Length: 278
Image (cartoon, rainbow, N blue to C red; front, side, top):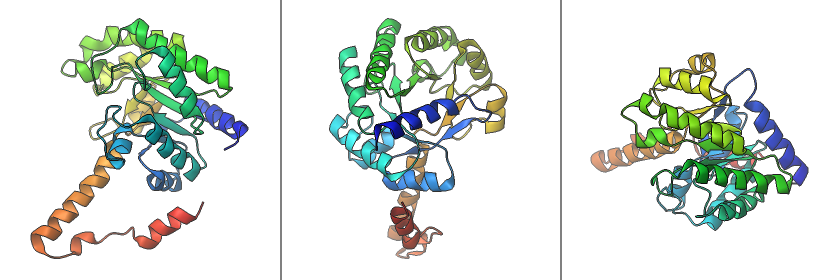
C-alpha cells in the first residue's frame, strides 16, 4: 500500500466516528474472515487479538510475538480495500518508548488504527492513569511523525476488573477517558461495560467518540445510536462463533458416525471465490 492510500484510509476511519450512523466493526482474525466481512458490506475492519492469537497457536494477552502479529496484519490489510484497525493490546513493550517503536512498526503494515489497553499484558492490573496516558501520547507522537493520522482507540479496562457494580467504576473511568483524549486518543473503549444506563452516562461525560462491545445482550444499534455511541466492535465473538460451530460439528461426527453436521450454505466454491475475487 502506498503512503497516500494509507493516509486516506486513516482519515476515512476517523471520519466514520463522527457520522450519522454508528460505526459497526467486525473483528477479523485472518485474511479470509476479513474478506468475508468486506463482502458483507462493512465499512472498515478491526482485528481481534484473541482470534489472531488462537489462529497463530498462542493464547491471548500479548503472548504472540510482535513479528507474527505484524505479518498477519499485513495479510489482512492486503486482503481488503478498507481501513483496518488493529487490536494492539497494551502496545507491545513496558515503556512508552517501546510503544512508540511498536506503533511505527504497525503503521508500516498499512494499518489505519489501533486499540491500546490501559491494563498490563494478559489482563493484568491497570496502569496508573499518567503512565497509561503517556503511552497513548507516545503512540500519537510516533504516528504523527510518520504522517499517518492513525486512529487510536483507547481501551478503559475498569469494567473488566470491577464488573459486578457498573456504577462504581464510572468516576475513575471518566477521568481516565478524558486524560487519554487529551493525550491523543480519538475514541474511548470501555470494554466490559454492559449496563445501558451507565453507558449512557459515560458517553455524555466523555465528550469523545465511544466504542462499546457488541455481543449477546448488547443493546440494538438503534438504541446505542440514540444515546450517542459512535462505534461498536465485536471483539472475539465472531472468532468464537466460528470455532464453536466447528466444535459442534466435529462432536456430532464422532458421536454419530454420520457427516450431516458438515452441511453448510457456504461451501468450497464460495470460499475460493472470496479468496480470488480481489
